[in-house]
Image (tube, rainbow, N blue to C red; front, side, top):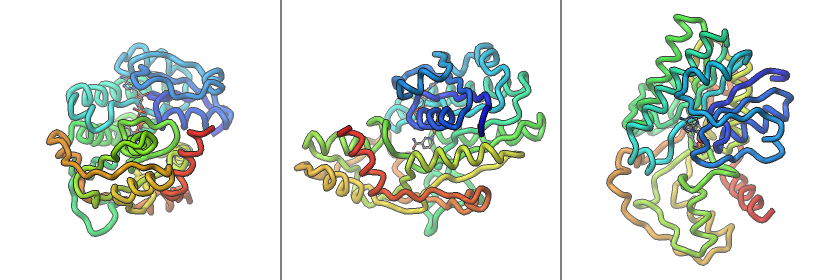
Length: 310
Ligand SMILES: NC(=O)c1ccc[n+]([C@@H]2O[C@H](COP(=O)([O-])OP(=O)(O)OC[C@H]3O[C@@H](n4cnc5c(N)ncnc54)[C@H](O)[C@@H]3O)[C@@H](O)[C@H]2O)c1
């Protein structure tokens, strides 16, 4: 993707800021729309090269105006973080649904032929599987966040059928990396370890996740955006299971921390989010674009640690 005019909603967030940097580096004109509720994570040198608008994605008229002449919209604005979503289910759903309505209307009105949407592996819900999940299995969203993500996936399918706007929905599996904040487990464990405070693991720590490095996720996102045609859903996963207990131990080890690892009960509001096992298959992604994420957990943790001392 070169010389394109690209709009990124949520472009100042964790994944969005990495996507913004990469698309600028590739030579595109990037417009970011973000309310900055999580601060601005776009590096200063990149910020100087983009057009930034502090705008709510729900503001349809503004989004239509700012997307004029765009070739593609990456829709990444969202409310996320388990505790925040659990405390704000209505706002979470409204942001998803209203945001998608603005993006869809803008694409229709401005003749933008492609939308790339950040969905979530959360749509797989509590499905207890003995194998990694692929896109063909039935979904089981349980939370306001994942229900709204699934709703938007279905909406995008109809947007192609009815208006011919192509899109991809990316089901991200626990993306981690530099600039993520402590709403998420890896930055939280780093913070606790570096402060020599107890590293707090919910439950036994045997629950698994598939930690996917942010640069890999961004690479997959751009490759899929280039090929987008029709409507497709893709897992973006590293295909490796890691227990939360292992993550705590690895972070304690690489930070040379004196922290103890404490196992505590998860707050009841987190119940729907406490999934025993989740890891994904990126076979469809590999098949489609010849690439799948491969950065290991240890390698990613080391990059994060190194970035803290620079
Ligand atoms: N991080 C993950 O592991 C993960 C996993 C699955 C899906 N996702 C999805 O990927 C996308 C990016 O996630 P992230 O980790 O970068 O989150 P993030 O919270 O760092 O970024 C989201 C950005 O959206 C912005 N935003 C929120 N509400 C807005 C609104 N109404 N209008 C405009 N901007 C708004 C925020 O200010 C923030 O900068 C989200 O859609 C998220 O649901 C992330």
